Image (spheres, helix red, strand yellow):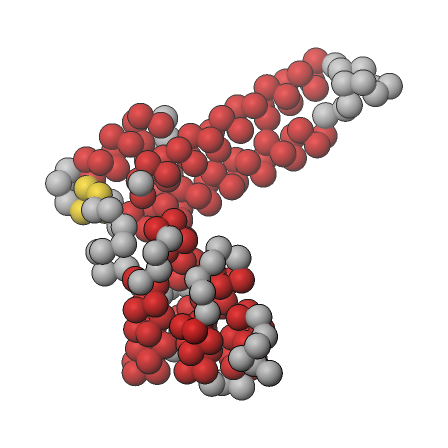
Length: 198
């Protein structure tokens, strides 16, 4: 029954039974794709993040081997980023481009993003030629993009319908400008994270 089920259901089944090797097998035997397979791998790496020592290695290493062989480069990177959110590092330097502090600062300048917001959560070395943890920076950058996107949406939802009975007043205009500004900041963060991993 598990063999013919969806990969997410199979992984959940094995996780509930505490049989993570079965969950790894389910992930390894399915064709990698951007929805269910990615979700199943994310669920598996979440479980691996709570393990230690050999138990963790028995889950993490086989998953890493599968991810390295994924032909879809974008899917591969997204799975690695999902895993990093759970404290599991599937990249040993071969999946993400190598970025230095100089690259990081140049991309932040070109996209108009505030690097101090990243430095609150990720250690950025002083040396311009030192490597930067690109995956960690992308996770923080995407979080800032989502934050500003949510703020823009919230403001837009509070505005009256232009064709409705409520007149568009001055404070509505101010809110609309703020929403546009928040959306622009979100777009800058998105551009920054894309440039960092392309």
